[in-house]
Structures are given as C-alpha cells and as structure tokens.
Amino acid sequence: MHPMYVRSARWVGVRGSSMPRIPWVIAAAVLAGGALMNVARVDRTNQPVDPADTIEAQAQMPGNVAAIFQRACQDCHSERTHWPWYSGVAPMHWLMAADVYGGRDHLNLSRWGRYSAEERTERLIGICEMVAGNKMPLWYYKPIHPPAQLSENDKKAVCEWVKSAVVEQSAARASVDQQIHPGDAPQQMSDAIR
Ligand code: HEC
Image 1 (cartoon, helix red, strand yellow):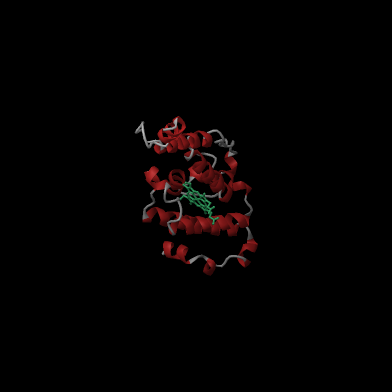
Image 2 (image 1 turned 120 degrees about the vertical axis):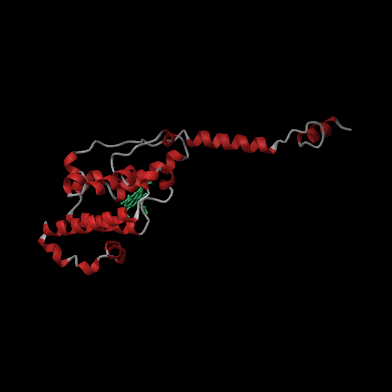
C-alpha cells in the first residue's frame, strides 16, 4: 500500500487511533466562542444620581410602593442597578447589559425629574399596565430574584398609587384635563384598581 494512503486513512479515523475527533472540534469552537464573547465588553455603570431627580423625591409614594420598585424594578429601571458577579461573564454580560440599558431608556426612576409632565403620565400609566398585565418585571428575572415576584396586593398597590400620581400630576398642570379623561385609562388599570 502506498504510504500516503495509510497516513490519510489514519487521519480520518478509518484505521489506527479510535479517538473521536469531532467532539474535540466542537469543544474547541465553544471555548473559542466563549473567549471571544468575553473580549468585547460594555461598561456596567450606575451614573451618579441627583436625589432631587428620583421618583421618590418627585412623586408622593407610600413606603410599600417604593419597596416594590426597589425589589422588582430598580435593577433595570434606575441607576441603582445591582450588578452581580455573573453579569461580568458573557453571555450573561450581554443579556443583562441589554436589559439594563434598554430598561433605563424606557423608564428611569432615578431620572424622573427630567421627564416632562406628559412623559411622566405616559410612564405612570405604563407602569400599572405592565405590572397588572404581568409583563413586568420580565419573566426570567423573577426566578433569579424571588423578591421580585409580585402578589395581587402588590399589583393593586402599584395601580392605586399610579392613579393618585396621575391625579397629582394633572393637578400640577391644569391643561391636562383636556388630555386625560378617566375613561382613557386602560382596561387593565381599571380592572386592577377595582
Ligand atoms: C430584568 C430587567 C427588568 C426588570 C426587573 C423590569 N423591567 Fe421594565 N423593562 C425592561 C426592558 C428591557 C424594557 C424595554 C422593553 C422593550 O424594549 O420592549 C422595559 C420596559 C418597561 C416599561 C416601558 C414599556 C413600554 O412600552 O415602553 C415599563 C413601564 C416598565 N418596563 C415597567 C417596569 C416595572 C414597573 C418594573 C417592576 C415591577 C419593571 N419594569 C421591571 C426591563 C426590566
């Protein structure tokens, strides 16, 4: 037999070594992929907060509602994010950074003072809608953060507070009467309050 043929036959595992080669290739690819994902990073930052800008300072809020925001929302919707150690490891790193920066973009409880009256009203109603509709906190956050599980009473408390905060908001701006009518409140909100 030609020596060339013997060598190539051994290469593909027909003869000689019985070592499975394909799993090694996959393992090497997974390792390389994991290493690459960990090379590129984004900063995990919490920007400094002006206490006067926070929702607690800007809107009157009972303690139980403030506690709900703290345990269920602030990791993604404020500058008080707790970044656990695994948030430093890809792919968790990317998933969490996307949720936190995306969440803050939609609603930042630490920057409440920067929203216009209209933006606040929109966000207030959104908060009740999301909570009453079980859309927030995000479903996969709850098993990792059991205190973020909201009871029916918690949801009710949030929506009751939203209702009074919207009223407070409208009292602060007379013209709001033209823009918000109680009948406009989403069905979920009135259901949750009832
Ligand atoms: C694990 C992260 C996370 C947690 C915890 C979380 N959110 Fe969110 N939230 C997001 C992200 C991400 C978005 C942006 C959603 C999108 O892009 O569709 C968002 C969007 C929102 C919006 C805006 C929806 C819209 O249509 O613009 C509201 C309101 C909201 N969240 C309220 C809350 C409230 C209230 C809590 C706590 C009870 C909470 N979220 C907890 C990540 C989170």
